[in-house]
Length: 252
Image (cartoon, rainbow, N blue to C red; front, side, top):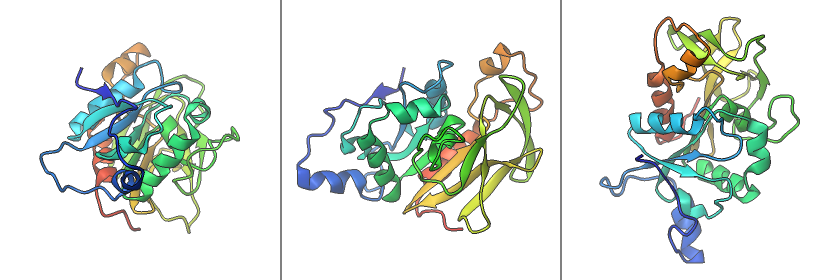
């Protein structure tokens, strides 16, 4: 495997230098240093390899994937990061498990120019409240999230993504609700017109979320015997990561 966990002891920095290194806006001062995509792995990440699927997308987008556990509170883990990927799973479990300091460090990282990509549960987690659960999310995306209702555990959904229509894997994901004044760009809609994917800014950073799973590997479809009209959607997932990791921040 090419991915790895960051050690809690990674980078021994002075207190004065720590915040400067960890939360300065991402730069490319050393082009030989591979930029990292930090990927949450812990309680709340789905057992169907949601974190591992994010690894493949990070590599496709050209980043070094690095797993981060929910108790890794040293802000130095963000020192060479360009983007954070929050995979699918159970967002309320993530919210209850992730250390409060790590949540704040993540917000600070994004505000300083880092990126955030949320797939499914990661989309729920981005809003101030997680759907109708009453549990607090990160609050890095305007508007709200709500569960897209379905009588099946997993389905293929028709989504208008940009100017094209795509068939995407969906499993318990959200749709998003915004006001006209919310500084967001809707990038995809479900067949009923509700928001399937959107992107926005948070401080100097970028946030890109989706309800369906463009990162879903084929075996997720195979398990539920789902027919996909147009094949895998990894290109959309990689584009999300690339966009979120880019500077300067998105401005509507």
